[in-house]
Length: 219
Image (tube, rainbow, N blue to C red; front, top):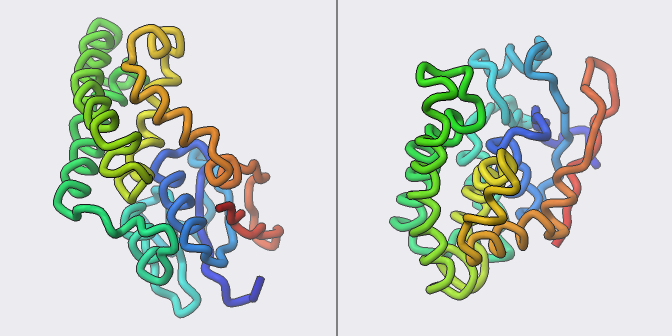
């Protein structure tokens, strides 16, 4: 790795950071990873992006990209060997907006009920709201040959599945019993893929002067 490689501030379990790492890995970008602890964010990250959320990509010339989808697009705009950007742009945007807005809202209130006004009493309603979004996705996956837009995965699949993974893990027994087979198989295929396993490598918390491992690249 060169000294001029971009720096990625990341948090392993964050679904936004996951999809940024997936895009960078798929684009085979040479990136240094700084794993952070969100309750004690490094000053260097906050100086680059004061909003304090991950992921944050700092390019060698100083440009900062601090939105996960923008990081994916930057990487794939440089190199898109698997054709992630070839799918229907309008449908890709619709699926991601649905994921990042109503589905993420339901997911947060299902997974963390105590953090929201409805509390535990609202938890099952929020799970049902999430499932109402996932059932049509399952039909779409079945109709398209195994992925959201085509038989092979595209940008939408990688932008969405980290959030579905979080939903599934909230109650694994419920997911196994109630989620449609098509979406269970789709999720398992992604979470067991070499690329996902590679980008989920564990790193120690980064501190100034510590090693900066290269982002793993798997095909």
